[in-house]
Structures are given as structure tokens and as C-alpha cells.
Image (cartoon, rainbow, N blue to C red; front, side, top):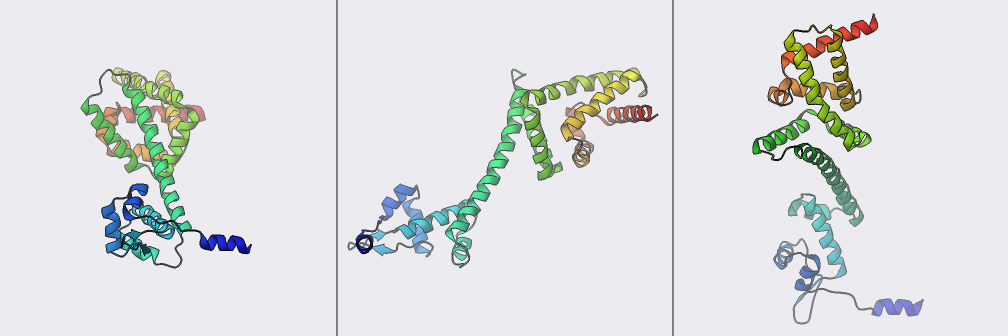
Length: 257
């Protein structure tokens, strides 16, 4: 035991010159000099020739600084945080892990949406700038009208159904809307069995999207109500939507009778 202790005490500690540390970490020499100048990270030792020497403790502090920088903190905020006795290296790592997990979740959601868009656009030989602008508009509206919890639930349903099933539903909507519009323009009353059958399928597709969650359905209805331009892009308009609602109401009355 004593021999081991003497060996540990006699072991040479690792040290890095500023250029070596910069190369090993991908941090610029200028940044390391600036951290030293403002007292955020100063080398713990110097060589006989006067070179800055960073020890293992300095490397650990640099890792903490860079993690906190990636969390969006300013250098003054980092200095204040690292000075707190209740903040440990482990707690900083956990903070960074949590943020990365949040970013991964957002990236996963965005990936799912873009994959769906790619499948949709693949049906067309050319995707125009107008179509891309509409896509961006829709993405922003989704974030505007749905809560994070609702978006997470919608994503879970998308995963449960599978990509092929979701694409089939997306492809069915335009055809269904066209059939409903044709009946409306012919003057077919909403009570007609053919219209009620279309209204029933309309409800089924909405239920597939919302999972029967009334809050998600209200968010969907609010989005179409407040964004007439989006509704028009999807083939909706107030007259068509009212026609479908009257058909659904008639269908419910017939079912409960």
C-alpha cells in the first residue's frame, strides 16, 4: 500500500501547453487566452520557460464552461454558476444531457414531419417555391395552435400507425373533400345517406388524427377557423365545413333515433 502511495505521489501529472490544449479540444488559442484574461479559466501552472500549463483540473473546468456555453449561457453567467458551492461537475453534465435530450426530441419530430413532406412532394416532379412557402407556413401554424403535449401525442399516433398508413390517409383526404364538394354543389341535402356516409368517413379520418382527444380536435378546428388561407390550401371553406357538420349532425340524429 505504501509503495502504491509513493508511486501515486511520484507520478508525473499531465499538463498541456495552450497550443496543445487548443488542438486536443478544438478550442481556439484566442479563446483560451480570453478565458485566462477574464479570469474564467486560468492555467494552474507555468513551465520554467514561462509557458502556460493547463492541468487535469483545468481541462475539467473547460469542459464545464463549454457545456454551459452550449446551453446558451453568457460568460458572466457561467462564472457566477461555477462559483456556487451547490453546482458540481456532475450536475452540469446532467444539465447538458437534459438539453441534448430535448433537442433530440425536437429533431426527431422535425425529421418525422420532413419525411412526411418528402413523401408528399415525391409525387410531384417539381416542388415550387410557393409550395415550400406553404409548407413553412403550415409548420409554423402547427407550432402556433398545438401544445407540446399535443404534438407529442400526435407524433406517437403517427409512429403507432406507421408511415404507410399515414400516407394513405393523407392521400385519401383530397379525394374525400372532392366527393363532399361535388354533393354540396349538386344541392344534395346533408340528410342524404350518401352524404352522411361521406361525413362518417370524414369523422373517421379526423378521429385517426386526433385519437379522440377533444383538445386536439379543438386545436385543429381553431387552426382552420383562424387561418382561412390554410383551409383553402387543404380544400376547405366555411360553406363546405358547415355542410359536413350538418351531415354529421343528421347522421347522429339518425343513429340515436
